Image (cartoon, rainbow, N blue to C red; front, side, top):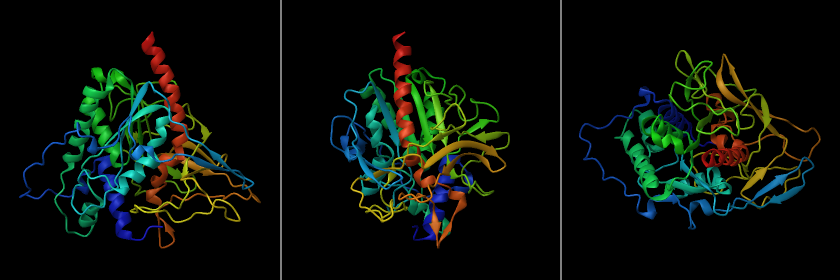
Length: 400
């Protein structure tokens, strides 16, 4: 559960600013700001959360416990791919509680936790690359909300990711296809990277797909290309490559309110919703990998317990699966364009009939936040499967 309203509003502000690019969330650079920091050298392995061939943040256990309707528990073992043919490149969301306006490049529990939850499972399909970057911190947004802004360099984190991407292309890619993966602030940074460095350029030929979670990527109404990107369409099948999957999750019975941070787009546009459970349209079952503990923000430590069965049974894995409990469909209506998640309760069953993931303050759900905290968890199994299908299509196309 969220402990502080200021924490929530800080995160909401940074999400709005960094995924939608709203000038209103400007944290203001100080006129007497110091000289620009030195560029990050990504030849240094210490500035990578994840790289192939080593034990690092992406090596945390990914086994999951399958919770059946009758309360039975079954362990699902995770296996990384041996010699995967493609790569995945990830930019993590806002997690830093460091004291300055921008984080440093020190790996903390916050980065380790989020890469474990949102990216490590892609090792089933690809080699994993995840750079550290000097992101805008939660501290800066709290200061802004309090009316006491501190200096922030919005380009600093982007330039880090750009340098990491260029290093990867020069030293690691070797002609391989790549999937870009981001969430929230990470999706905002990747959107800029794609727009400025990939869209319509030769390197676009390496793009298998871009997975941009927890963002409002604009596209003209009724179109699958245009808006943010001019040559990269929305993915509409598991076998389509060179495309983008973007979405923001809300409960079907708690749609985006008027002041929602997600699901909205400028006049004449709409936010992209590509449903990982059914890219071709309609509803599909979510193959979710949910945290075994209760979801909260701003915590690097162990999660509070969450009861998955009645009576409660101990869960020994970091993740749980709840087959048949969750489905999703893209909705475009007066509330916006978003991925609507439906919970399917089983009366009389021993398994829980709900999930953890809403932003809650004093017992009240903040509707403008939706299920942003678990965008990746809800769709993880579906996304990993899509990457597998896309990889086959990409490799087949390149052989031809």
